[in-house]
Length: 191
Image (cartoon, rainbow, N blue to C red; front, side, top):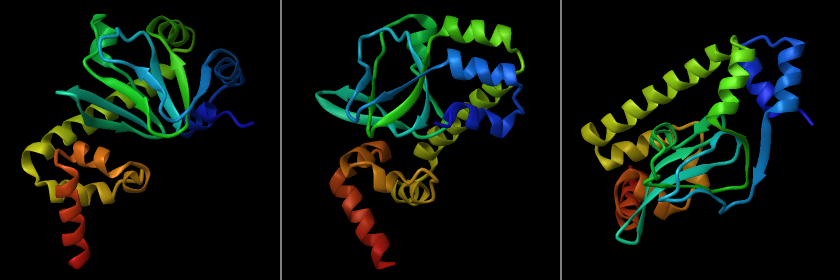
């Protein structure tokens, strides 16, 4: 079976045989079933993930109601940065929306691997920069755009979240109720 991680890394860097062998032999890749909770509120995050296949959701429980704040699709890091870096309890959950294939690691394993293969740190930096930029844009969109504009932008997403995510989770992600999302969809269909 083709190693999805090698395929992803090879898009950005030409890998040596030694690097390919190390990735294939040392990096842990696991399958998780839909509904698997990767991290619960109150737990200290000790694992980091990279999504090779599937969809992971980040959500908070607020007064017993789930509030979705992020989706992590293919070729995206799935982490609780604050919890892991500061060793504090997570304020959110990470759960598999679909069956997922994820790279599973921890900070010390990643550090050791990057010390042995420093060229790969370039890729990690690129990923962090991309993730930071996406987070900035997402925050700005909640301040400067309407829910309908956010929904239209979501329609353009290459991850096809509209087809992959239940409506109530999409509504929460957009910061609206499922009923409001239904009204937005109807308005768009009429246009």
